[in-house]
Structure formats: C-alpha cells, structure tokens
Length: 189
Image (cartoon, rainbow, N blue to C red; front, top):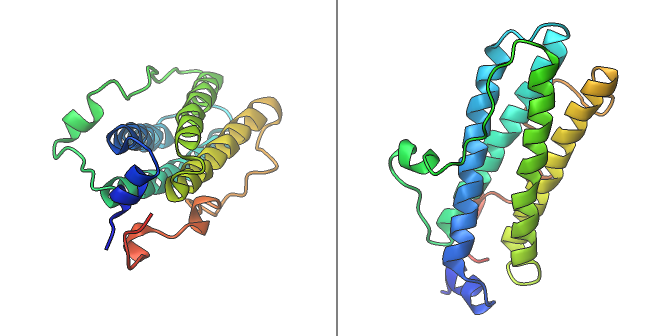
C-alpha cells in the first residue's frame, strides 16, 4: 500500500519542506493556545466577559488546529520533537505582552491573528491541485483564522460581534467538516 508521503512526493511536493511548514504552523497554534489560556485568566478591564468568551472560543479552535496539523505531520511520516522547548524555541512565539488597557490586548490579538492567516495561504499555494488533504486542511484553518480576526475587529468597533455565537466553544466549523486522522482507517493522501 502506498503511503501518504509517497502520494505527495509523486505529486511533486518536497515533503520535508511541507512537514517543516506544517510543524511551524503547529508550533504557532500551540503557542496561541497557551497565550489565549493565559489571557482568559488575565484581568482585561471593561467588557471583560465578552472578550473573554471570544478568547476562549479562539483558544479552543486553535487547539483543534494544532491537533489536525499534528495528525497530518504524522500521516506524512513526519515527527515532532520530544522536547517542547525545542518545538517552540525556534522563534514561533509572537512578541506581545499583557498590556493593562482593555483595548491593547484586543488590538494586539487582532494583529496577531491577521499574521497567523498568512502561513495557511502559503500552505494552500504549495499544495493546491497536488495534495488535496493538506490543501483542504490549510484552507479550513485559514477560514477559521479569518473568522477569529472578524470577531476581534467587530469587538473593537461595536462591542460583542454579531457573528460570534458564544457557547460553541471549539466547534471549528470549517475544520470539523474534515475527517480526522485518528478516525481514518487508511493513511492515503
């Protein structure tokens, strides 16, 4: 039986480069999950509960993104470092702190999410028409990141965003349409 790695190689993609990009994206998702977890506990000032709910949903969707990326890495016969410091120590963390003003974290997070969309566009460009599974995965995560950006931008301009629906924590509407590697019976691309 042909492996997922072989299928992607036959399509003309440098699988090591693809795994490196997926690993970088996974590290960024884990880093974001960690940061949003801390921010949900941090006093954010006015509109505290509304922004906290948005951050919790983004955090939980980012965890799903991490899981899906890791599954794809392993499907392609890649691995992750056993040491988390090695995994995250390559400059994946974004340079932000915990400003005391309620607008600063939201503005900073909006810019952070905007930057987080770009690697998925690159993954889409790399895999379009050649690695459908990775392409659809990257496209789904990019769509969810774009939605996160919209939630934060709407919060900044009008308060709690109309498109944000609290209580669906981590539902990952685009990603949930895809099969998860652990649910699959074969490793084909």
